[in-house]
Each structure stands twice: as structure tokens, then as C-alpha cells.
Image (cartoon, rainbow, N blue to C red; front, side):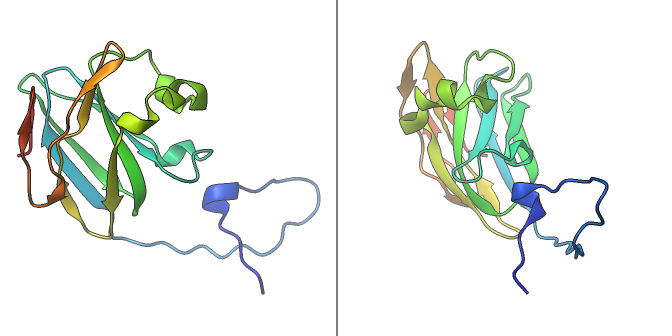
Length: 146
């Protein structure tokens, strides 16, 4: 029997009985920890399946610049750090297309714990990003791994 993931495509509930649904629950989500400029906005955007906004993550750095993105589904993402961004703008393909090449590619695997220094997008420009590796940080203008 051919299977389709409803996680990516969803399903409709109507008057006809639905096809059988098999639910599989997996553990092993990843974590990304870093520091950025205090109050910075960090977004983690999937490289594929962008129609599924459940795979989008957004957090703000705290008063000392620390942030953590937990319970990240294993997949390939791009990590962005913004000084300012309109609320919800990162859900827009049109908005992201202007900054796509500035995102830091990140591979989140099951149970991975990454320390990352993303690019900072500032008034249409961005600063270089630090090295990304499991357990490795780095420092760039206003950013450092923890």
C-alpha cells in the first residue's frame, strides 16, 4: 500500500469515510543553541516542504543574547538572525526570496545538539557567519557559539 505523510500534505475530513490512517510517533528532535545580539530575532526555515509552517521556528535572543531552539524536527534548514523583521514575515516566500542566500544551511539530525552562529541580516546587508558544527561555536560581529 502506498503511504503519504499527512505531516506534509494534510488530509480532509468530509462526509465520506476517510482512508485508514496510521499514526507513527518518533522521538529524537534536535536542539540549536547560540548567542546573538540581545533581542535579535532568530528564524529556522525548512529548505523543503515550506508549505508546512509547523516546520518553521522563531525565537528571540534574551537580554544577554542567548537563545535555544528545541524540539526541532530532523531536516535541512536555513538559520537566519534578524535585527528587525515584520511579524510573521519569514512565512512569506516573497519576503524570504530577498534574503535566501544569506541563510546559514543547517542539518538537524535525530538527537543532534548544534551550536551555531547565524548570519545577521541588517538593513539589506549581512555579516559573515561563524562555523557551524556539532559542539562547535565561533564568533562574528555580535554573535558567538555557546
